[in-house]
Image (cartoon, rainbow, N blue to C red; front, side, top):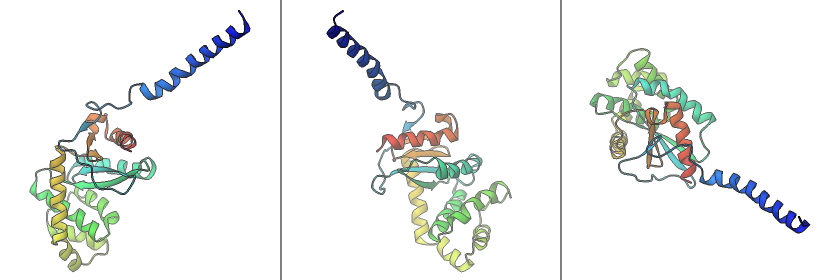
Length: 216
């Protein structure tokens, strides 16, 4: 074999070795598949977010035991594994139970009064550990008192137009997305994933990271 032929053949072999590596990264099967691991929401509409951010929303209910057990996983994911481009929000829903709207009111009251970090976990524990329904304004007021909120401030905020509006918007959003069970994670107002589709609730957060990366 002539030297020029040998060089040409070696070049062909080198190209053949390198090309599959490049193609496998771009053209191979995706780790998560639409219709299997995640599905499109009923009425997709991208939410307003900061530039370069993708919204990931956890639709939850304080009365839901699965949400209670999922919450520490969400907090760990936010601290350690949440993708940098994610803007995380929570959307409380009553799941068709009017009494659960009291819990949604508590969430948005805490948000407006800037005590959500202190009150969020306390609400879950009051319901699922201390077995309080938190269906009365008085019971909820006690939790806010522990967070340093006086009764008058709590009452005015809890019954305010601002809280009313946020609760109604959250319920409308959950209906728009077609959420039927919680916890459900909605990415970019376009796709939803939960423990059933992903395989577990923690894997649902992995899917959220995957979808957020693809939404950029």
